[in-house]
Image (tube, rainbow, N blue to C red):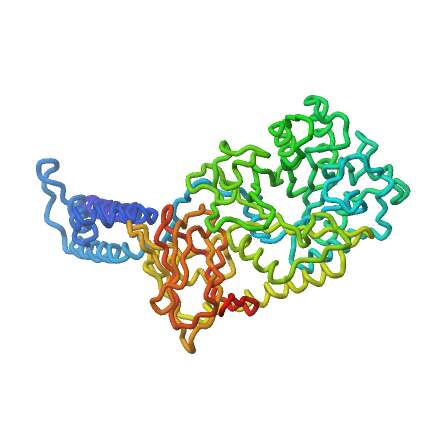
Length: 565
């Protein structure tokens, strides 16, 4: 009987210990938000929950239930007294470990701010610069818009080398090139079985050539993605104006292009047509669904998306405010009344539809012997006003009548690429000490300001506390000599939504720049030129949710010389 009593006491003691262990585990096994709630709500009301005395009390409750429930047990034996002491010591040890266990989980990221980009839109945004190649019968007639009556026999690029086009793209750091498979004149750069107005009727390659095939194969060999432009307006085909017949024709050619030439990453649609063109309704909804069916990861470009939107002009300039969000229901292809809306986007937009800035390296879209490429300063200004305003720059580089990119265009592109590298290869912020107004989850949470200096510009970022404060800042301080720069780069973690609505930049307490949206990349090329100072503070004073800044740079642009400075 004594042995049975002893075993009963041991069982009760063990039951109390196990129960306490389970209590500790259940208390600790919570995420950061629950932990925060527990500490701020329950702990403030029942501070004894975190005390070792609570665990001792619980154990005694199991060992000695209230008399109203069970008969009082006999006094503990000396051996049991030692066991009780061991139990209390164990409980105190467990309780001391509890705070450590509670904090071993990582701080969770904040909730996203909708809408969000798709995977293909994120990949597109990171390209920053892509190429357009306008090439066709217009190249040989010295015109921009062909009238559709051109003979295919004039198309004869005797030295055509699409591999050279792709080499130029690679040397410029471009990872996507788009070809005009058919322009408004209706001439097809591939042997379409639905028309004879194509390379089939040309002397090039004795009528057996295929520019689209050579272009796509050259790109694939160098790891460059491709896009295609198929003009909706067709000035040659007699079916144009017949809604049913022409839409069937267009869809048939669309299927040819998207089935025969492998992966296509962007398809270009526009609403351009002359004032005297026949009345024609395009079945864009049918076209878009067909594209999505044939190419699952493609971005569809048009005035109304659904993957990428037109910026509203052909200068290559986005608005000083430029949201990637917009309401597609307010857009229609070819509607000139929406160009300002396209240029700025909409902070209340329900669709993620970033802007693409199209512009040519030359005055015209097709190659003309009398034209020359834009000056380097002009290309840099376009870069700052497109890529530097949360857009992708679509730069047209037209092949000449030989079928090659002209030497002077190549030279200008080399200068352009070299200038960008020179400006942005050195980030002065990397040599500074850094601090922030607050950090989500505390110092070692992974959301500290040091995240803005790594190489991940999407998924690592500084996040301040979500405590209702509307004034968030991050500050860099020179550790040695003064900072000297004239460009400030700010990037948001757009994978969780575009957030920043208003921001300011201060050097040694003096405001030197202000702006609205940031998005994937905002470049402030300082209006007054070079500034010098020891501290640089970037304040976010307006944001949809807390701001998430993924990268910051302080750069020197030796090509920037403001007038009068």
